Amino acid sequence: MPKNIYQWDQHSDQPHVIRSKTAKRKLYLRGAKGSVKTLLCSFILPLTALRALLDKRRGPQLKINNIGLCVNIDEPLPEKKVVDTQSLCNMVSELGVDNLLIRLPLADIKNLEEHLNFIASFANKNILICILQDRRHIEDHSLLENSLRLIFSALEKHCLQYQIGNAVNRRKWGFISLEEYFAFFAIAQTLRDNEFPHIKLLGSSIIDFELPNFARSLYHRYPIKYDAVAALLYVDRRGAPENKQLGVNLLGKINSFFSIISSSKKSENELLITETNWPLEGTEPFAPAVGECMVSEDMQTAYLLRYYFLMFASGKVSMCYWHQLVAPGYGLVDNRNGEIRKREAFYAFKLLVTLFNNAQLLTFEYHKSTQLYRLSVRNSQGVVTALWTNATTLEYSATNSSSVLSCTGKVMTQNAHEKIIISDHPTYLLDYNFET
Image (cartoon, rainbow, N blue to C red; front, side, top):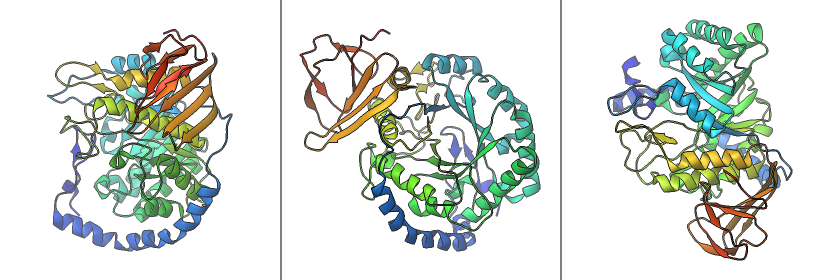
């Protein structure tokens, strides 16, 4: 198979779609046996679905410490203003986020020192390294072992968690079948066991809500075991995170994934969402996807927060990383047209960290009659309640609330008896006086 069918799109930070029909046909034929095994895994899904229904949430009093953000080296392009590493560090500091995911592409192993220096800039953060595969390392196991040894050796004192592979169920990312991925992960696991026993390896790395592929990544006979499961759980194709696919919304999708994980012997019972976002309208060619999944910057803010709220409510996700800080087509910051512009979502994410990080989950409710969602937590200052709806509005009394805030921190009312409008954009009720 010619290597030039795998091309990187610098605008959207992902591989280009493989356009050659001949090449795609060959890939499908080579992966046919693995596809059949994946299809057979579908037969276990009704059992895991039943298990998910019986175990919907972990319960109240959970501590929220799972807000994460993807931060990567900003590659220069004529249409962009390059954001240097110090500026990225400053923005991470402003957001107050402690958990970062940083990509390290094997295709650029020759420039490993540049990536190491970038990672070192965030040495005071909890960092997950995402090892991006390329076809050369998939095919050459000796090369893969040597490259991973270089990475683990250089980072073993600073980074203890590594996601092995990314979006492995998409052929444009290099793997022809999940069988190839299992062999790829096995190289990393053997190296870890022999030389770096203290590091933690995340696997599965399935993108989107594709239950057969997710199940297959955890039901097989290969002698590997993930220390935790990484899932790139995008829901943008369905619009709002509350919208349903195969009968379940984001909460149901998390429950389904966790049910499969907990019934498998191929992983510890830990789930991390290592990527999620929505592509933004009018940002082509920087958008990672086009069509009805694209949203306005205004709705990006609403969906980001609601994704995190539902994820908090599940009690089953140990970390969730928004992808990513700077990206014209989907990030919190736009760097086109010669300027660095922080989107509304940037400030909403900042307030999310301020109000919810290290808070205790108290309650989560959905009132079907009014279509009101309500999530309450207790942080170090008092109780915060997030209220929102999905594609509707309603009036709500803010009685007994000391502060009523918009999702970006604007004070909405000082009158505790005044009716407020609840909409797609979450509103925060605080039982204490909020100070910026």
